[in-house]
Amino acid sequence: MKKDLNFELNILPVLDILSVLICFLLLTAIWMHVGTIDTKQAIGDNAISGEKNPPSLWVTLAKDGSIQLSLRDVPKANSLEESISKISTGINWSVFSSKIQTLKEQMPELRTTVVRPEAQTSYGDVIRVMDQLKKYQFEGVGLSPLG
Amino acid sequence: MRKSALVSLRKSPLLAAMSLKDTSKRGEKGASKELALALPLTSLIDAFCIIVIYLLIGTQSGGVETPVSAKIALPNAENGITVDKEIATLRIERGSYFLDDKMISKDSLTEKLAALKGKSPQSVELMIQADTNMEYADLDPLLRASSEAGIETLRFAVVPTR
Image 1 (cartoon, each protein chain N blue to C red):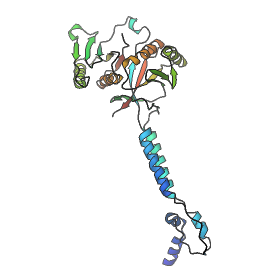
Image 2 (image 1 turned 60 degrees about the horizontal axis):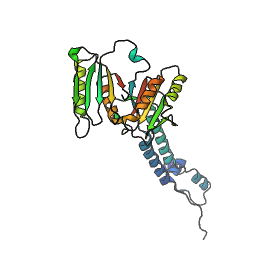
Image 3 (image 1 turned 90 degrees about the horizontal axis):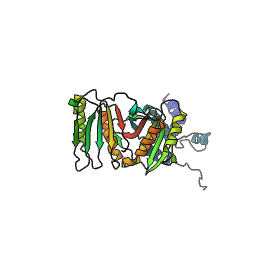
Image 4 (image 1 turned 30 degrees about the vertical axis):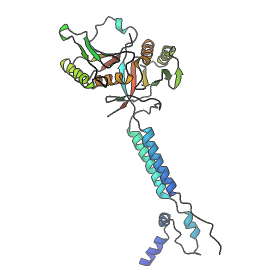
C-alpha cells in the first residue's frame, strides 16, 4: 500500500503565538506617553531692562530636603520667609503643598515662581516641586542656575 | 429541497476553510482544488484586529512620538502637558549631553544651542530628557547655555501620572 506523502502543516498555533507576542511587545515597549513641564527662562538682559518685577515666590531647595519659601517684590505687609523642614524620606511634600495652596489663596495675583535648587539636589525633586507649583496655577515657573 | 441544501453546504469553500478537512470522497473530481483553497482565515483576522487596535490607539493619543533612551528613568508628574509638535531634544546621560542623539561636549553647549536658535526665526523650544536621580549640578550648564543662546522655553520630559 502506498503511503500518502501529502500533509497539511498546521500554522494556526504558530500564528497565535506570534499574535500574542506582538500584543505583548506593543503593550510593554511602545505605549509610554511622554509629557513635559515647561519653564520660561530669563534670557539676555531681561533682569536689567528696568521694568518693575512682578511679585514672585522663590523656592530654595536644599540637598537634605528642607525648603525655604520667600516672597519678593511684594508690599512689606505681605512679606514671607518660611522654611519647611525635611522628613525622614526627604522633602515634606504634604506641608509644601498646603503652604503653596494657602499662599495662592491669599495672593491670587502671584503667578511667578523661581526654583533655586542646590547642586546636589535631585532632579526628580526639582521636577516634582515645579509640578506642584503648576498644580496651583503658578504659570511662570523658572529655574535658577547655581549661584 | 433539503438534500440539495446539504450538498451545497458540503461544497462550500467557506465551510471547507473552516473545517480544513478533506470532506470529499476519494476519486471525486476537483477534490485537490478544494483543499488548496482552505486558507487559515482566523489568524489573518487576528492579525488585522491587532493592526486596527494599534492604529486606533496611535491616532487617539494625539501627541508626537518621542523616543526616550532606555537608560533614562524620566521623573513622574501630574501636571505634564502633551508634546504637540516636533522639537529638538537634549538628553543628559551620566554627565554627557546628547543633542538630537549626537553627543556634544559641555563646552560646546552654548555654540550648538545658538546654532539651533539661528536655524529657526520663530521661538525655539528645547525638550530636556534626564534621569530622575540626576543631580541638579548636571543640569546647570545647560540652563546657562540655553540662556546665553537665547532659548527661553525649556520643556522637561516627564511621565504623566494621570
